[in-house]
Amino acid sequence: MQLQVKLLEKNALLKGSQKIEGVGLGLRFPHFDDILNNKTGSPWFEVITEDFLEEGPHHKKLLQLREVAPIVFHSIGLNVGGVQEFDKDYLSAFKKLYNKFQPQYISDHLCWSAHNGTYHHDLLPVPYTHEGLSNAVSRVNYIQDYFSRPLVLENITSYLDYKNSDFTEIEFLKELSKKTGCKLLLDITNVIINHKNNNEPTKKYFDDFPVENVVYCHVSGVKATEGSTLIIDAHNSAYGFNEDVLIKKYFKNMPILIERDANIPTLAELEEERLRLKEGIGGL
Amino acid sequence: MDYKDILDGISEEITSLSPEDSMLNLRVYKNNIFNLNIDLFKKNYPAVFSYLGERNFIFFVRKLLMDEGVKSPNINVFIKSFTMFLEKNKGMHKDENLLELSKIDKLWSYNLSEVTVRKGMFKFWSQLIGGHTPVAEINRSEVEIVFSYEVNGSRYLSAK
Ligand SMILES: [Fe+2]
Image 1 (cartoon, rainbow over the protein chains, first blue to last red):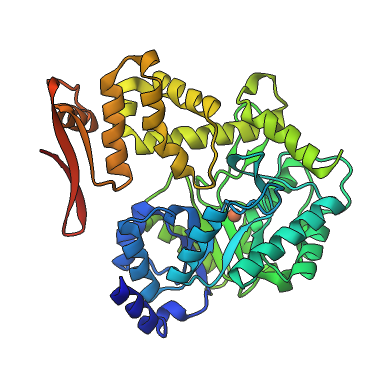
Image 2 (image 1 turned 120 degrees about the vertical axis):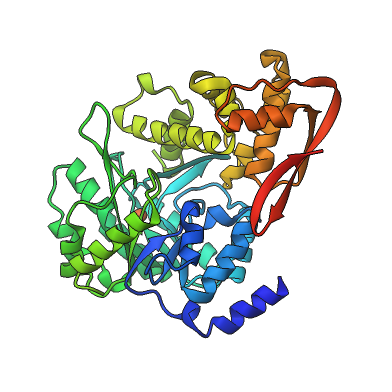
């Protein structure tokens, strides 16, 4: 293990230490060997932190990957918008992973996912109230102090309509990043889904979004809900809402990540989608 | 209503896992949570799934969710607890094969080193994984140790 860490340090001066840029892919286990055998041109990868909480041969493979490509950690368990105490074991395991693999960013979602000791493992929207904001500010600060680095927060899809909000989502995100210094991960498809589900145009949202705080973007495929008109962020197909046009207009030169979590195709198919997006936004 | 009260209400509702009587929008979350769990259990307990069939498999996963709930941010902790749950509920299912298949599945899915089962179980498990109807004979009075090993970076299971 010591040898691997040394190797990582040495090679970190090379490709693995470069900043993320261009169109990257999410690291999914069925593709791991193909990725290590250079079967994608993806210049960087997003790694789901929770996939690595357990030790195993995949740790060795990720160290190998780190030698040649930058990564970011993307999590679902920090429960930033929740109120229950942080799980100390989870945070400490997360920090160990952070030290071992040195991702460029650590990100999670502006959501709550656990309550009264039960972990829902789903992303629930935060009520955009003053109380919600001060709760999120103190929890983001806690996490940032713990990791000694800014947290990156992603906008989610919402299927709940809270009454009596004090802020819009954008106002909430702006205030939160102003008060904590956190960065943002903009999921372009999530914005489109939320607006389509509410029959609203997206223009104002994208015009107003604080692009200066965004460090990278997500795009993904969606699915319709059985028996209703609701669109779900299923991440089970190729992106298909002309996200490339929006990226060109609003987020030129921003690193973009294609998310795929279900109905996972071959790496070759994902690579095709990656190249299509790359071309669509002007060949970053 | 304060912030915590709002979360209390939603959390309680989505944990109940009864989609029929809930608002459409909360149903989205309930379905997400339920489907996520079913998919992960299927992936990590393939022989149990094949042995039980979809309907019975869902029954057990639902019971585990309702009885125990997910108490860790690491969902693998919950998925791994399936064997313990089957052990605890042996009085209900009365099926030693089910319990031992889950142990071998867990060994395989979570890179564990070995498990002890009744002799013949490993063959029984292999036949299920291979998509065959299991015909292996289980010897009730002898045991075998199923263990994992690695060759050229690939993992294998065997029994001794
Ligand atoms: Fe996303």
